[in-house]
Length: 375
Image (tube, rainbow, N blue to C red; front, side):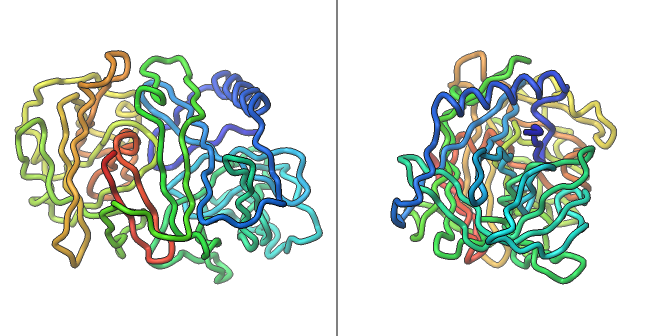
């Protein structure tokens, strides 16, 4: 399989050698602990889907594995809340029976690579041997070997985007209306993260799909005016200091909900944070040296972020504090830039994949909401 990448954060693997070696390790791990696809198991109230995480230099991504009807092999895809569609890699065989070729020589909406658009069933092996089947799923199969992607879009929007021909672009989990609730329950930061250049794999994270709303979540409407799945940042503390950000931003900032990546990062266009002296300065990550980022600094101070949404006074606050973790994975907590490349021109911040390791994150695809819960 071509090793996939997500959109909202830097790639975990940066060289062909790393990608090739990691692909082989992932394939070996799946073969050693096979996940049976037993279609005889009846419908369940919820399904737990095993996710494989890949980490390097305090970044991580999660992979999910699917099959089409009659396929002998699984297809590994990165779980990406910065994408809202299902894209399968070049060469994925699609059976004629049961699948409709809706548009040939289309462009897949993730990166606009050449692809064919299909509609049909996908199957995801569940923990315990059952199968979660999405009977009527829209997906793209790449046709250009030089621009092949493998992405399980999990982003949710208030209004679905549309293709050039007017068809709705739907994330795969929005094509399963009987199970609209998706919980991202990752393993601990200690289990998932590698702080070095060595690649670490872990298979203990779970995507839980439910027919009923799980308890304990603070639920917020997804922002209507944001291109990405996002909430509204209300306040930010660095250590014990309440900053002026984001109240002094000219454009209402967003808080991207990312279920991979690393530390929080933000674009501080007004320079409000420049006067804050962090107690624990940290080395900038490699991506800050790339074109598109400017005036970046990093820190390991505890960061308290308060989130909400438009039209509501309800908020949810949590603290990202890695000081209690083993020294090897403490890492940084925030990278503050005047311009952060991976904000793609948006004002605001990305809550960072590390937040997904200290929180449980819920996406309600029916009501277009995000839920947050401390562990």
